[in-house]
Image (cartoon, rainbow, N blue to C red; front, side):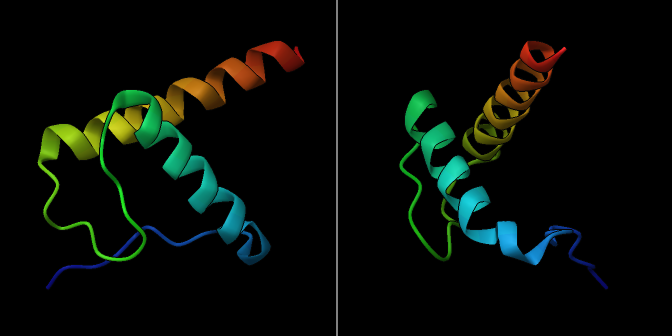
Length: 64
């Protein structure tokens, strides 16, 4: 059985996180669409997630 662990801890942040994900995908050249993206390769999906983490770390470092 597979469990999903991609829940948002703050439900009010869902829209902002979706926008953030779309921006990150555009920056790395991945054609991400709203809804199902099961046609992405692991490399493409990973590059979007990696870009998001990179941007979050940069934002945190700027706040120090």
